[in-house]
Length: 125
Image 1 (spheres, helix red, strand yellow):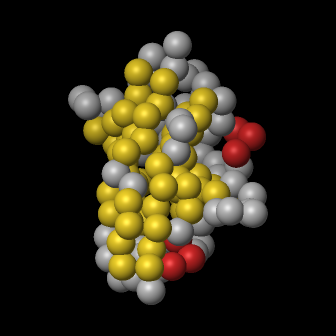
Image 2 (tube, helix red, strand yellow; image 1 turned 90 degrees about the vertical axis):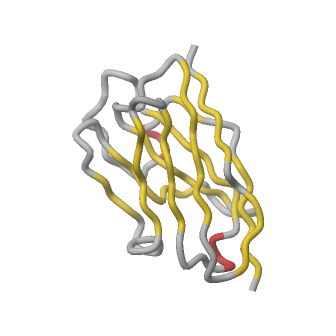
């Protein structure tokens, strides 16, 4: 059974930094994974993704500020966030494609089969 557990969320002032973690069980993070976020009243949007070869893609509005990475030994996915803005406030979710679909490099939520419960990030001005 695949389980993804996010942590690291919290409150930060504009311009600050946070690092989110996503610990996986029943799944190897060396496959295709992504980070999404959802603000109240808005659709869930993809912000960063990584495939099995380590290629990454980002939404334009986080490019240069956020970095997705993973530690295969710890079986954990990360999202490092810098220069945070109030509009980054949202619930953040990690997601994983089916294990054999390591080629997925997508910010589209329908490409992902497994989801964590989310961690709240709040950025104050």
